[in-house]
Length: 447
Image 1 (cartoon, rainbow, N blue to C red):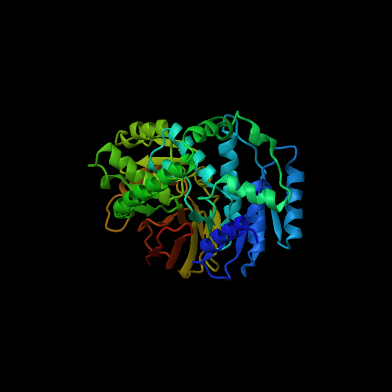
Image 2 (image 1 turned 90 degrees about the horizontal axis):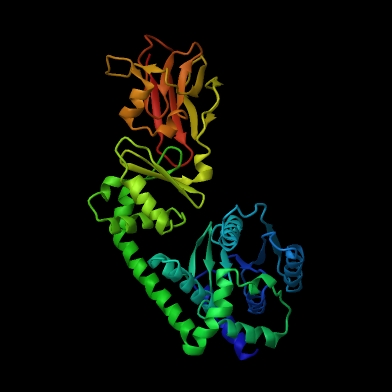
């Protein structure tokens, strides 16, 4: 085995040392020189782990199908199963094709990974240096300048980059020596894309002046990552103390915990919160917009900001954050008759009658016309009053379930309170579990 092959195989073994030999491993293979080299090195390393190849077909090139077939063929010759992940969507207008392709690629890969499964990618020191420079030119802070970590969580699995300290020249030397085929993607030569421009126009000049620029940029990324880690640890307790989960699964952040801090510290803490949520980081103009229109909003306002398919909202002293797709699930449910004999799923709630009655009930959305007489209260209260009293955000109000009798006499507001407006009604106890991670709510309707 040649020295290059030994060195590349050694980095694979060293990367996998902390993990059990039974841990399944997926290899991300685009078909290019780097990933095909990774495939061959892993195949020749005689690993006891279960292996498979994952190839993402973005559908952007006329050659996408032949490339997928090529990867399948290479994997089959090495006796490794291969799965082709086809992207069904297209880049939205105005979005960066590079950013979109990266985002949907990692989403597809994350979706396929099993619990604890490892995903190997063939990123090199060249990729790392390009990322650092791109982030620097975009005005990124420490999280961006930290560039790509050697490992991170991805879906239920772990993403590993074993060759992040090796140059692309090292991989190319190995690939030419082995003589196996790979794909030459013509889009990699298109300097209209930022990364390609750096790769073909800028880095040759940098290397001619500073031959060790790959190593120095990678070292800077490592220093930034270490500094960011220290900052994250420093603010970790603050963020966790401020975090909670809403009834619909949205992430919540109590703003009073950072109200007295200067703007730069507020941003650092909120960045850490978004990192925990695995949300994309807003760019500079988006942060300024968040600070101006959301954090400094008037007490009665309910501002919101959208970015990268996520949305952050504010109600009173709390921020609410979730992907746009999750916000779209906040729709009023249809009225449903509940016979109390079987559990009922209504929105995020799973209702179970813990003490049944022969009289069925209805479950429906709360409306502005609803009025309640709560325990220890002498006045009927409107739904709007109760929402303000309990601090229910506006977007949840029409989605909150009400339990009522067949003739529309109100019995309970699920998760919040029960009515005493009925003199007598057959006893009903219910248990509501929020499927998205909120706390349980148990209600008893009095005799």
